[in-house]
Length: 149
Image 1 (tube, rainbow, N blue to C red):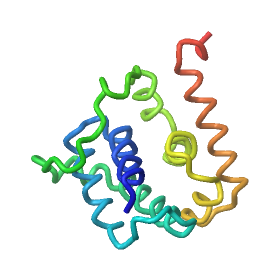
Image 2: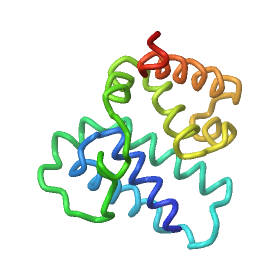
Image 3: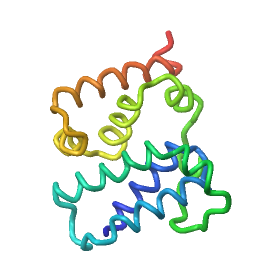
């Protein structure tokens, strides 16, 4: 697996959990699930598999919070300081947005997946993916200082 993919997994998990300990454990699970891929550039099939793995982790976040008490440090993940961003609007977005909107913003806008990859991973149309992304971005923009005006 590429270092870039591992970095993407780490960023995704941090932005979902907003807690380094849980994010590191979840990311280590994702990395171990994806070890079967070679170190070459990601093919579309690999990106779809990665998207499915990340969606699975998103859907199991309560499990990770409940059973992971002392996860081992695996990836040296992102911290709030290293991201150099204000997480207040993101926290609000996580509380108010639907699962689909959060996943669309994370996977498409932050990690750079294509609408086609996410559509295949979720077995939905690309139009549905685009619709969810538009609604997610609109909601997120309303939570930022410029969008709240």
